[in-house]
Length: 284
DNA sequence: CTAGGATCCTGTCAGC
DNA sequence: TGCTGACAGGATCCTA
Image (cartoon, rainbow, N blue to C red; front, side, top):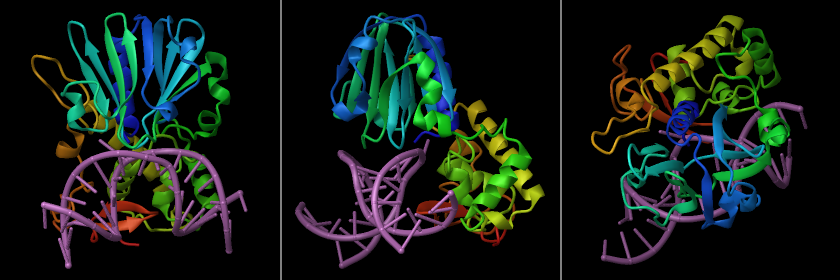
């Protein structure tokens, strides 16, 4: 998926484009993509959109919250009756093409447009919750702090708890720190020159502190670039998120030169995930 | 409790 | 061309 910066970008887009709109009708094309009764959201007004980790929380006027998790391939695409459209999530042509399509799982008809939830692999979902029960949701409740709020000492203690796991696996664990995904894990570890297979218990306190700071830094850069995927566009002139193109140092850059030392970036496998490193800058 | 691998699902791409 | 296996910006479940 869409990692934290993409979700943040979507949050901002939704707050800009669909706020105060009424959900007139919900069409569910895939049962597992929508959890809970559609009746609880139909007729309600969207009053605000929040984010926690990679999770979107759409607050409605009737004290119901619609939680949206995009997982690997989820997309949120807004088509306005008139004015600006908006799209974010897993980047595919669906951002531009005719909708609904084969991957459209849920359609929310709004007063001023239509919101499509597309998801190729069906891992993502929308879930209906009473607003005052969001914090008790199992996933939300288990999330660690966001990188900007993470206390370095607490993070170091968490590394000790997973001392024998590779550091990349640990920072991908949302219970340790919320929001880091495969792109920013690779980017943050490159930033502090640590090999992703390094056992978490081997990091010094300084390295732990630097890693938290690096995670916040790379995600900040991405949010400022509009996410690593194209995230917003206007009907007339499209602008797209271009973090990967402009800022990524290692992700999807295998075979290319390290921007720091010139060595060739390679792709390896860590914690079951494709992982990009500079073999010179990042030694175990 | 942790660590690691399988699993959910669809689509694409490299290699034969 | 057609087939096969690997893999994918995530998280959970199962096993040891």
